[in-house]
Length: 185
Image (cartoon, rainbow, N blue to C red; front, top):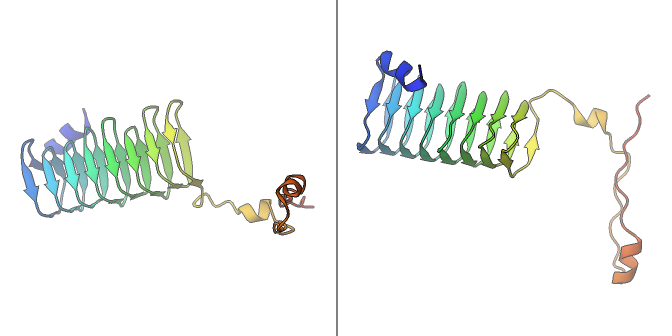
C-alpha cells in the first residue's frame, strides 16, 4: 500500500489532477494534492503531494513525489521527498528523507536520510545524517542537535596570526599557523 492509498482510505480531501487553486488552503485533516496550488497550504495532518505548489506548506507530516514545490516547508513530524520532486525552499522538520532535489536550508531536529538519487544544494542542520552512495550534497553540515560540545573536544589555545603586508615572495614563506588543539588531561 502506498502513502496515497492510505490517505484516500482515511477520508482525505482530494485535489484532482488538472485542478488549479489560486489561493491558500487550510484543512483540519489529510490532503491529497494531485493538481496545482498557488498559495499556502496548512494542515493539521498529513499532506500527500503529487503536483505543483507555489507557496509555503505547514503540516504534521509531508509526503511528496513527482512534485515541484516553490516555498518553505514546516512539518511538526517528518517530511519525505521522493524521486522526481524538486523543492525550492527551506525545510524545517523532525526527520527528513530525501530522494529528490532540494535547494534551500534544512533544519532537522532528528535524522536526515539522503538517498542515492538525491541532489541537495543546501546547508544542513541536523542531529544526524545518513548519505547513500551516489547522492550529491553542496552545502555545510552542522550537527548542532547531536548534543556534542565541539569546543570541549577541540579547544583553541591561540589565535592565528594576522597576515602582515609583505611583498608577494615573502608571503609564501610565512604562511599563517593553524590553531592548535590542546590534549585534555
